[in-house]
Image 1 (cartoon, rainbow, N blue to C red):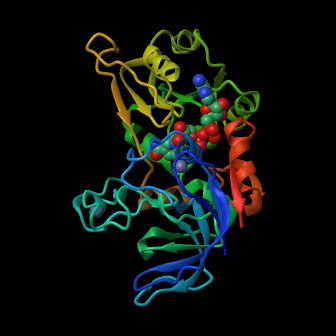
Image 2: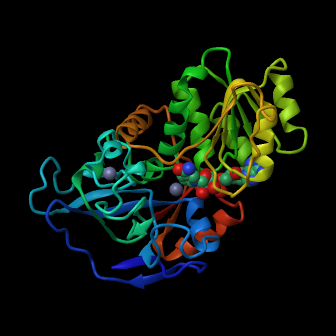
Length: 348
Ligand code: NAD
Ligand code: ZN
Ligand code: ZN
C-alpha cells in the first residue's frame, strides 16, 4: 500500500510503498477513509531535534484518522467489519491510573504502551496510508449516523483538542464571560464552534489571515480582531476593562503568549495549545491575580464521543479541503504557507 512516511527528523515526508499490516490478537486493521493534516506535523518535519521526543522516525504520518473496520484481530469483540469508526489517537498502556481515567495522553507506563506518549502518526504508523493498524479496539469510536468519515477525521484532533481545553475551563465560561481564541486555523475554527456549542461565553477570535477571520465570523465569533500590539487593549476595551476569562492560544509564540497575558482577566485561564515554542515569563505581579497558565494535549475517548455527537447534530463542522494521498506533500506546503482554510484532509 502507499504511505506518506517521515523517514528522519528535519526532512520532508515521502510517499512510499509499504506492506499492509496484519492485525495481531486484540488489534484492528482500519481501512483509512481520511486523515487530517495537522500543523504539529509541520513542527515534526522541520523543528524537532533528535531526542526531543521519546519516539522517532521512520513512521507514517497522520494522527487524525477515520475509516472503516477492515479486519479484526483474534479476540476483538464489539466492532463489525465495514463499520465506520474514528480513531482515538493517543495510545497508552490502558492500565495505569491515568489510562484508567481515560487520559491515555498522559500514560505513566510508557514501557507498557505501544509507543511512549504518542500514537499512530506520532511514533507509530499513522493514517496517511491505505490502512492503519490500531493496537486495541478501545481506540475506535463508532461514527454516528449523519456524519461522513471524511468530516469525522479532522474532529479527532482539531475538534477534540479544543474540546478538552474548553472543558478544563468550563466553570469560568459562564454567561457574561469572554473567551479569546488566538489562531483560527484547523484547531481554532473548531475551537470557536466548541465554545459556541457548549458554553455561554462571548467569543473573540484573533487571526492575521483574512480567510481565517471570515471563517471565525461564519462560525459565530462575536468579535474578530487582527493580531498586533493593540490586540490586548482592544480585548480589554471590548470587555469593559475586565479582560478575557479564558484565552485559548492556538499559536503559542512569544507574541501570542504576551497578548494572552496582557488581556487575561483576574482569576482567568491562559491555555497554551499551540507549540510554536514561545515562552511566557510568569511571576507574582506579572499576571493578574489568580490567573492560571496551563498547557493542554489532545483529548480522550469520552470527549471524542461527545465531539462526534455535536458534529452529527450539526453543532460542529470542520471546514475541509480534500487532497488525494499523492498530493499530501502539497497539502502540508499549503498549510505551512497559510493557504488552508479550516483543515486539509488527505484521502487515500
Ligand atoms: P493551523 O496552521 O491550521 O492554524 C494556525 C492559525 O494561527 C492560522 O490560521 C494562522 O494564521 C494563525 N496565526 C499564526 N500566527 C498568529 C498570530 N501571531 N496571531 C494570531 N493568529 C496567528 O494550525 P493548527 O493545526 O490549528 O495547529 C495550531 C497549533 O496547535 C500548532 O502549533 C499545532 O502544532 C498545535 N497543536 C497542539 C495540539 C495539542 O494537543 N496541544 C494538538 C494539535 C495541534
Ligand atoms: Zn495534531
Ligand atoms: Zn497508561
